[in-house]
Length: 304
Image (cartoon, rainbow, N blue to C red; front, side, top):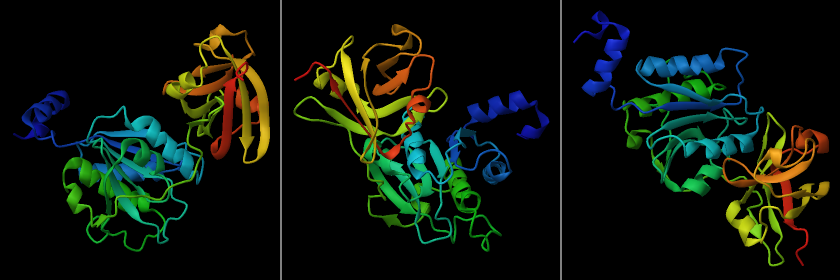
């Protein structure tokens, strides 16, 4: 059938029911490029050129410039909510053009991440497991005519390879040679519970719109430390060895459980401990930021 001769909506329905488009997986883009210029559009144009039926989506393009850690966290935050087979293209690549590896990681959950192996894969590897890692063979998986370009691998290698994989134009095995099942790791403080009931962890990210402070300490550890709803938590936040905040806050269900401007401890949408001010920015008021060098500790205030 010539799909050009039928209305667009009918053609799409026929494509979906005929099985022609059934091999396609979602292709999700993340970068630190922003949207001020044409870089993201160029990547999507390359993907569209591979297959015009590919569903293209954005995770975010507002990763702070060169912030590999935040790129790692946004992948971890998002991946679990996309179906098996989804292909992510993540480009936070301050080492573009150097000898860092360009890879496609397949997680044990069946997701694919096309990315430089520069620490971006730290958290998805840890939380979703590594099924395999393959080096991108640029002899076959590189946009034709881009061979002299050394500073836009997001367009020339990653978007092109991701689109070919998501469209079924290549299999995962055709990405390139198999590597050891490990990736470059960004070191950080994992969430732990100490014998005296103190919980320690990292501030991996801020809830940037509202200034809430998210930690990697989950609800299981919170219960293990004996901190229950209504208890008061003693909190200490450090940047490296420097204490940036020390105070107390009640552990409650939501923001409205405390007066406007007052601090609270709550579980965010990932069921991880977070610290906030109701209707104000905790991060701005206390000059708190995020990253692998930001540490938090808390315990029940009346615990011995």
